[in-house]
Every structure is written in structure tokens, then in C-alpha cells.
Amino acid sequence: MYMSDFYFELPDLQLPFSPDELFDENDIRIIESRYNEVNIDPNSRFINTTNCVWGSSDMVAAEISAERELASSNHVANVGYIAAKKYQTLLWEYIHDTFHPDFIRPLLVIGSGKKIVHANLLCTKETFGDSVQDWHNETPRTMFPDIINVFRNEVYVNFRLYGETEVDTTKVQFATISEELQKHIHTTYTNMFENIPHDVKAIPPELFNRIEDAIMLRASDDHMAQNTKWDEHFTVADEYNGFVNPYCINTSCWHRLFNTKKPRCTLRLSGNPEYKFEYFRNLQLEGKFIK
Figure 1 (cartoon, helix red, strand yellow):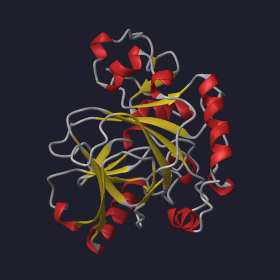
Figure 2: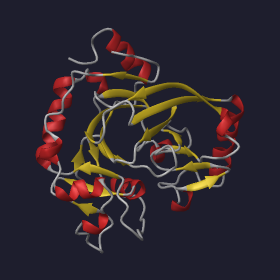
Figure 3: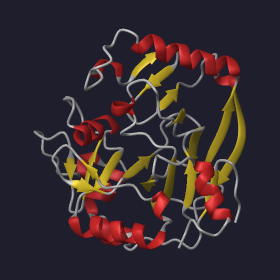
């Protein structure tokens, strides 16, 4: 088992349900971006299947927070969550039976008042040239933490539900960035938020998906656009090749996913944000992370 400053594998973990049990035909169509084959309610911002709810990352964030309205002109579904009570219960019991107590987060109360496990379903496809995603990270922010940090966390355990496993078809790259870029990001964020009153309960929607000098702010993470002057300020520090086993990932660092054109769906189980990746990494070294 390989362990680094960015991830460690958990080969003995297995979810209490299979993808075949969780997903119906419409889930697979969504994962594969075959939206024209999905029965979509034109009056809904979301796509409901037998056991799951799907939408764009910002629509799901809006649903969870119930803080802001987002109009959707199309149904691009790249993020979802398990809605069925049966599988929510199985997952909640599994987390308590499997992980060190410090890893476990309390249930999340979403906009409808329903309580769910802090876990989401993430679909990724080939959309940005050689890599599926831009460089991005989920570092919690000190500006408006009660709003932004609801959706961000430094530690996840990832389970593959759909997609390729082999080392030549999928990998995650991790990078460090230059001091110059660090300062630039800090300045950019300060400028973006400086005119927003500190007592707001919701950040204005126009600040989400806003790009300032190649930096994009989203509820869930920060993105750095590709093919800009900042590309050379990223230095690849490690790679995780393949996706055979579940693994714990440090999402507070800059990372990006490379993949083939085949779709991939991951269940991302969020850890307790009171603890950093290094803490859980040390628990794993001591044999205490998994019961």
C-alpha cells in the first residue's frame, strides 16, 4: 500500500451496497451523459432517479444550502447525492462501523430539511483536452466561511462506482504552486470579496463561477483555468495511477484528474473538517483509521 502526502489507499474497504443495487438505467444514462435518453421534468432543476438526485455542481449546492435560487437553462448533471432512505441508512451505519470516530461528520441538513450523509456522487468525463479537470482545490476559505465552507473539505475517501480501473486509463495528479501564484490567488480573492457586507447570509450568485485572471470561484472548490500564463507555476509532485482500490485524498492541495473518454462516477465520502489530512494519515500509519 502506497502512502504519500496527498493520498493513501484503503484496499480492504467495500461499500455495503453495489453500484448495480444503487443505480438504475437512468443513473447510468446520466453518468454517460446520455441526457436525451433520460425522462427529465422540465419544471425541475434536478433529475430524480430511483435512489439518487442529480444536477450541476452549483444547482446541488443551492439545493443543499437553500440560500439562493439558480435558474438552469439545461440539465448538465455532474454531481449527485443518494436520496433513498435505505441506502442512506446503510451508508451511515457503514461509516460508524468502519472508520475512526474522528473521521465521522454529523448528518447534513439539506434545504428540504432532510438529513443526509456528507457524501456526493461525482461524474467526470473528457471535457478539457488531455485532462478532465482544471487544477483545483477545496481549501476552506477564511472569507465567509459559514457560506463557502459548507461545501468544502480537505479530506475525502473515494469509492469507484463506475468507470475504468487500469493505470493507463485514469490518474490523479497533485501539484505545488509557486509563491507568486499563492500571493496572486490571495489578492484576487480579497478583491472579489472586498465590497460584500460581512453579515450577508448568502454570497451573490454572480460571484459563483466568476473568473478573475484565470481563477474561478465555485461553491465547492477553486479552479485555475488551463492554457494561461499560470500553467508554469504548477509543479507536479505526485500521481495516483488507476482506481482499483478506495483511497483517502487530500483535496486541500491542487490536483486534477486525467481520464480516458470513458465516464467515471465516484462516491466521495467527506471526512470531519475539524481534522486535516495529516491527522488521518497518521491514524492510518498507526493502524487506527479503519476499525
